[in-house]
Length: 127
View: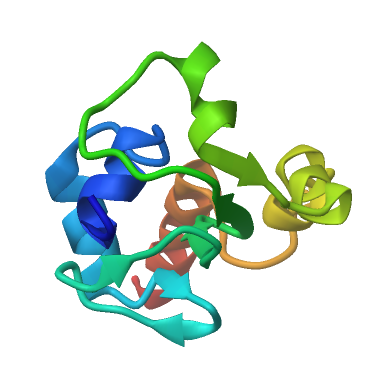
């Protein structure tokens, strides 16, 4: 075996849980070989560098051996060397304060209770 389809390979080395997820990632330009985006049918060779984007993290692997069969996690290092820099892995544990903004009471849109109070106040002036 000289080559293997990229979708089969990234599934076999456990980058994705299902082969259909691997295929969709390839179609969505989330998988690259040697810096170029690939289609699911692109062939992988020994020595190729594979980049897989999952969320905000870009994992990088070097192909050591080829396989089409999914394997246990303990066997993956025999087939692919993980070259992902620590800075990429740290993104998974980045503080999440930037995603949630706390709104002080009384700023922004009124709450449901405040809206009812405003409606009651307006109805007094209209009568």
